[in-house]
Length: 633
Image (cartoon, rainbow, N blue to C red):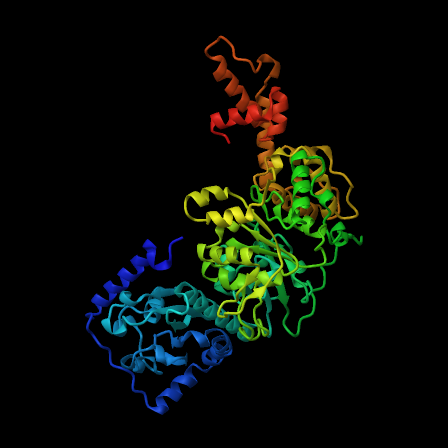
């Protein structure tokens, strides 16, 4: 994985900045006038930005004192015009002739200081790191700067946080820390301005890292309309959120979210089928929303409220031999400390298998910590996994950040989408697995950890090893036992699985079984989103049915339309499987006809390989080979 300054888009940003400097009439030997503000002028500047300064000090000072004080790092806060408001840290890292430019009132705008972290971050409205020789002015080429913009609740750029650090702290880590600091300030600005009379929803990929400063934050009113959100929330939900409604973002109802307990996390599924964990904070004057009166005075309860808290290994499969073999093998080797790598398409149930393994292991009373490696910004993976020294991030983590690995001590660590982990973090993880010790970021102390490791991926890790994106030594370390869960469309226990999930989702007033037409539609669907998609479809159907038995029209419109189209196609395509045999024929066209018929049957069976193989009277391996030759799979 390339570092930022090696990436083409980054080089283009630096080149554009240099072109702007030339347009401003600067030359490389230019020396800007240092700020010489009188004490009264400095006081006026501090009063003008009192809110931003106090918020930043709340976030920055504890962070600096506990994490970066040993790294000779200088942190500066600048306003939206690139004027320095205040600095914290070690000014010894700057040469004497640069010190005046770090004082209050000094301008780092590109027009005056050329290409630099503060000015270029403002010009691009994005985080950036500027290496020594990337500075336009020779005056600044003895420093390395990292900066990230700060946006207020209206998404107006109000300031920039920057850090100048020496070689003792890796530069990629410095940029990540600056981004995290600016995010923390943004979060505090949202809470200060809107928290007293708006709902605040904190979001992250898993509940284990929901207290991270890098969590998404959404402020919304009682109608569910979003008033403000931070950049991380927009990233998690895949679009700008301001002005949108919760109902357009999540499968769960607005009332379900607004009435959820403040003391426990809520599991949410976005309309794009992304699973997130949330934590709700209500405004002081709001308790819970009254439920909407029902048109029918019938009290309904759902089986969801009575689901068992732990998952049995027997719950993972219901007659599928491939899954049964995966369950049996994984359960045996995990107890012996052998790392497990679970492969399979997105949504096949990898996390459910991990929960079942944990619940049925000797460590079921110890933590299961799940980490989605793709959901953490690359610069922050190391700090999220390995933690920080105690005392950082006042408010969010008053006692410091243990890191997710230490949270899993004596339990199980589940690294989902491990193939997305940056190479730098891969090296540190390998050392942890080899030495069973973890060293927090900014510390030299080694802390012993006792973890069982389960990893998961939805694409071949061997390909990433061959491309240099994943370390071969780490691959062999985590790949003690590799199990692959089949996609839902190929499972022989699909009917039983559908029934089980329906039982978990249905209301008590609804029939215990689905009617044949609904079951046929569900059983014959190709399920590109696998079990996760099935769960969402059934949740929607049960909710729309509203206590009545689920009918075909209760399923989502696009699902029904696709089902009707496939049914029409199947009625038009008439095929007698006895009209050909698997053996080759003398006719030159027989092979072509066989392949055509194979494709017709595969389409009739809606992608169900097992069913198509039975219809064609061939083995699944033979069918797979034909489909590969056809370019279908």
